[in-house]
Image 1 (tube, rainbow, N blue to C red):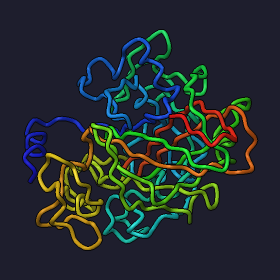
Image 2 (spheres, rainbow, N blue to C red; image 1 turned 45 degrees about the horizontal axis):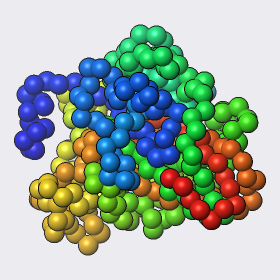
Image 3 (tube, rainbow, N blue to C red; image 1 turned 180 degrees about the horizontal axis):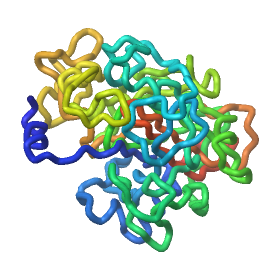
Length: 377
């Protein structure tokens, strides 16, 4: 067993929910950077974002805007059941992501079987789970008090726990996206519970609803996905993109290109997953095997010399250092901006549908669409 993992288990530290956020363009959700708040006060202070310039950056509390208790086919989120592995609303929505290559956890479980315990979570039918707010809720619930699963938020003059992300004021980023061209964006995983994500646009003069964002999903430039390192360098990778079984129909999503955080033995189907029997679970080593082999300078296995022909780490000697929650890598994407869109101000929506939890992370950034060939980031 990995030495750090063994230490964590001995100490009995609790698992935390997945966290992620847009880094560039700067999101409205990062507004607390203006008062110097980077993460909630009791979190480690080393979680500064990784940006494309290689400079240190403060992303406020952008990684704490999300919705939880959100299951595919349900009309709304219950704000509490982020780790329940059931069809909470009982409407029987069938999962649409079944191919193991598109799944990020528990891949050996036959799709739809009793051991496929994550089949009701958002990633298993991307875009079909509800959200509490299209730009997230501060702290993940509509209540004022902090909650479990790292549902915390340090109150500032700009935001407070339970605040709707769509109520945040526009934040001038100075970012222009070229109509008919490509736009560069980056986001960072803080705690990785698998699944995948998409980008969307909504005209800034319209209500920022999920319905509005779903009208303008953006496609990825497939050969331009990369991992951003702390020094700003980008390593291009082979991304995995999904367009079948997504909502809206045909919208393009990407699986997270980093292996997920080890989930431990918290994997029993039922009203909660705290039983210690690892039924239907993947092991920590297996999570590395299922994830892509990322070259991470300065970490064991960083040369990826022990990967197979499909760029996957071997079970016996996995490449590590990029898996889970390293807090030191971002994901760079390039997006195709449709040629038919009129110029003007838009809001870029980023949505991450988790697979190992019933949670959706969201972020919204102000951009301007222009016919200019210049791209300012």
